[in-house]
Length: 192
Image (cartoon, rainbow, N blue to C red; front, side, top):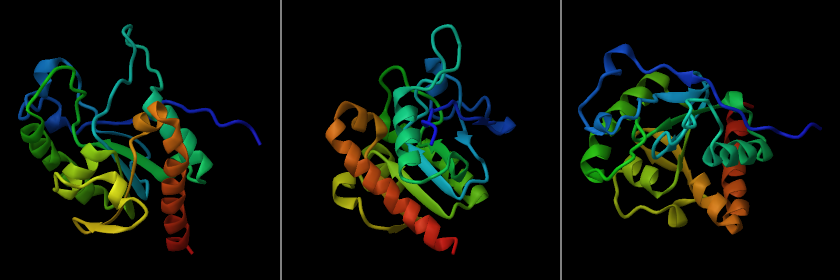
């Protein structure tokens, strides 16, 4: 079997009417809006905190560590890239301090709209920021919620550690794999 090679996923275009969105103030930080990436019709939506780096300083596309880890472990869990669509609580990468609570609440409106349009079969929230924002509970933590299905906003939702946390703490990789296998198993059973 050939070795899996992470890749830059196709970016889902931001709706035209939101390209110049200034509501949350992150546009002032100079980063562009990233609506999502991967298969826009995918049955599984993965929610991260923000789009992170997609290009280097020269503007060349690259696969950051978060994406590498996510894709490698998803592959190991039996998920195909075509099964996945990745989106974000914040649609722009913050590069300076900002009012986190206010900005996340504003940006959640975009995510809610996206989910209503896409109607995913399953959702996987990665990291405490995504979990707290999506669950609308500032006390929610991956550590206590992982390994179970939760009905959140009408969607079957699972949680796992953020891929960057997994990169920084390799002992979390087995738990991350376990959580992605948990999602893959549910997806497989739903398709029978």
